[in-house]
Each structure stands twice: as structure tokens, then as C-alpha cells.
Length: 465
Image (cartoon, rainbow, N blue to C red; front, side):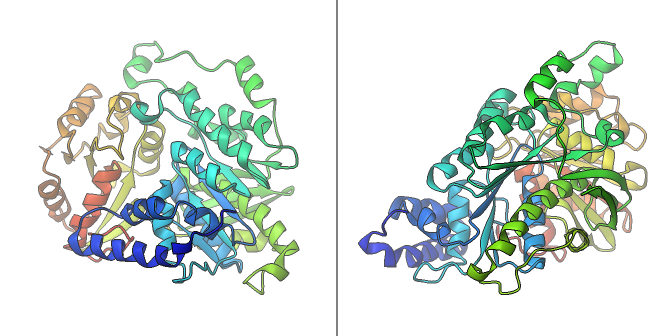
């Protein structure tokens, strides 16, 4: 652990002043205080997280990071641990530092047993150079933001650096061959565990290699060669027993298989994809709670102990959606669901999870840095499920590109307006009482929440209005 510089007493006050100033002036964003502190006191992150008796859980992957991080943090808190997390989805290293500034004392003391942190795939590499996680939960790799990450194997290599740095337990997605292959990267002494799917559910979650465009499916061709069984076996090293398996899904219902038994529960989460994220969260929480029971004398949470499978299932049943990820906002009697989409798999699973037949649909696509500049991935999404209902509104910086894409899938579009404020206001006030789905990229989601916050009750997610 790095030694604190003589001026470390000023680190937290400086960071909090920057945070206050950025909020008052509405400039700089939620990560600006972290950026300033990184320059002022580079060892702050390592020193602060090094205090935690159970260390750090690092969650990364292409899809599901924010929701899964929320699940893990919520479950561990329910089970008696004091948890620090970065709840806004600001998943760069400076975002973690900014979140720390709101929780530590002026002297830099963090009152927590464990940190549960979401990290962007690329920034996770920078993070593990400063802090070695005790637990890593690696979810999946998909083609996402090609302008930033390049091809899919580049993303897998980034996540391999996380596996290599993990000191306690690495939890891997058994069904994603490139993630499962990272078991070989775990250091000697680091445990490897898996979460997985029952055979009957695997068609819900195709790998990146299984996906093809709508046009190529309908004309009988494929968009890219599929992953062969031989290569899949080579990557995964064969079938592995999963610590937690998602065995069955229903309408706000899930069944998880653990230790030879099935556990059925109601859930508050939206979307079938979040049920698989819940299996991932259960797997890492089980690993943490085993260690917590052994280390409970050193923990701030006096009641930390081993927990039963029933207690784990009860904890996952209480988790609510993360902001913008199936979050429902009431607007004048209309339930408005915000559905974050940022790559082909995420968009496909969202479309499969939310029935458009009794709802109005809006799609808002931006191409800011946080969304990814290359929007060609929209052509890998199958929009044919929207043909019957149509799309009421298309908006965002890339509204016309999105409208064109829908046209190729013969999806009727009632209105296209690149001005997001006008579009959101018109969409949510039309047809009062009718459920509404808004599929949006990350920056479009943030702006949409801000717009809705001026006309409805929207909870503060720490990202400002």
C-alpha cells in the first residue's frame, strides 16, 4: 500500500469542493472530482480500498454490469455486510474515486467491509494495476463500441487481465466460451467458479458468434461464421459444473439451481436477461459470504455469518432495477420503462423481454463517447418483433439512422424527431394511461431521465439533472 503524502489531509476536502462546484455550475459531470483527486493524490484509491477487510468485488463484461453490481451490493447489504459501491454506473476509475469522496471521512476512513465496483472493460485494466480485487465477476463479451475496444477478442484480453489480478475467487460465465476460457488465467491459489444456464434456456442467450442480422437470416446467409463446437470446446476446456444455474424463467419469476436443489422465487427485476445476471450475482455473493463467515471477527458488521441458500434467494428477490435498466417512472398515469441498449445482444434481449403489443414504443439513439461512436451495431439487431405494433417515436442524435434501420426491417415509424426534449415530451404525454417503452443508449437515457424529472417524480441517481 502506498504511503500517504504529507498533504493527504487535503485530498478529501479538495475533492468535495470540486464536486460541490461542479454541481452548482452544472459543469464537469459526476467523475470530475475523481479526475482532480487522481492528479492531486494518485495513491488515494489504493490506500482507501486497502482498508477493507473483505477487499473488492470487481464486476465487468459487455452487458449487465450496472444491474449486476447493484444486485451484488444489495444482496451483501441485506445479508449483514457494510458495502461501498459506485451506484450511478460511472464505471471509469475516476468515477470510483468520485464515489469514494462521498463516503469517506475527512481523514480518508471508509466505513465498510467490502466494495462492489462496476468497471468498464478497458478501465478495469487500469484499476487492477492499483487495486487487486479479491473477487472478480466476469459476465460476457460481445461486440460493443468497436471504435473503443476493437474486435471481441480484444475485449476478452482486457478481461483476462482482471482474472490474472484476482486474489480470491473468479466467477465466470460458463456459457460464454471466451469468458469461460479465462479460468486458465486465474493465479495459483485463486478459486474459479461458474454461473450458467439450463439447456432449455440457452436459446435466449446466444453468444456473439451465434448472432446474425435480420437481412442475412431472411435471405439464408449468415453475418459471420459461427463458433465451431471444436473451437468452443478449446476455449472453454469442456463442460464445467456451475455454482449457480438459472433453471427456469417466468413473468417476474425465476428458478435457480444450487447444490443439487431448485429454488423458485418471485423477482422485482425486469427482463429475462436480468434473471441471468441474478444467477451471476448469486454465485459471487456465495463466495463472499463463505469468506465473511470465516473473517467475521474482523468485520464492521457484527452479524456477518454463513448464510443458507434460502436466505440468498430471499435477498435476490428484494433487488430492484438499477436506474435506466428497466426502471419504471410514472408520468401522469402512464408507466414509462427506461431500457438501456448499447449493443446487439442487449437490444435483442430487451426486445424479447418486453411485449410491444400493449405499449407505445420509442427508440432514442445517441453516438456520444459514452455510447460509442460506431453505430453500425444497430444492423445486428433483429427489429421484426416491432412490425405489428410499430414505433411511435424515434429520436436522438442518430434518429434518422435508426429510422432507416427500422425501415429495412419493415417496422412502421410514426414520428422521427432528433430533438430529444421535444420527442420525449410528445411521446410520454400522448395516449395517457398506456404503458410506454423507451429504448435508449446511455447518454440518451441520462437526458431522458432529466427530461422526465421535470414532469414526474424521478429518484436521484447521483448524476444530476
